[in-house]
Image 1: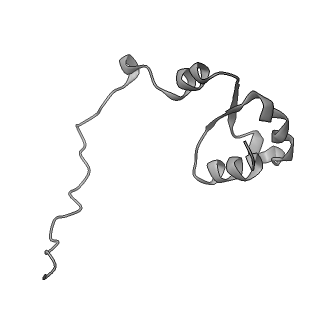
Image 2: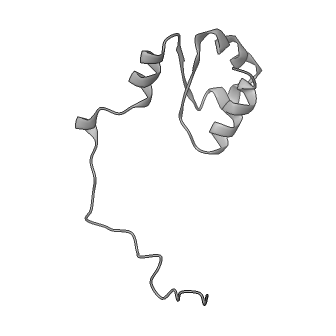
Length: 82
């Protein structure tokens, strides 16, 4: 994968906490500033099954809290004229 430094910095700016990357690109992390590396978890992988295992959540751990629904963003919005 090319541009690892740029991709990691973009992930950091977006608030992403875990970065999965090819094992062969782990050395490219040396180009990422230490203060950024310290805030992220890096998962080097060599096979696609490891990517899936680290990227997908266990469905049994998923929860959905409906007690505080978000406000309807369409309230008071009028349709535009054709």
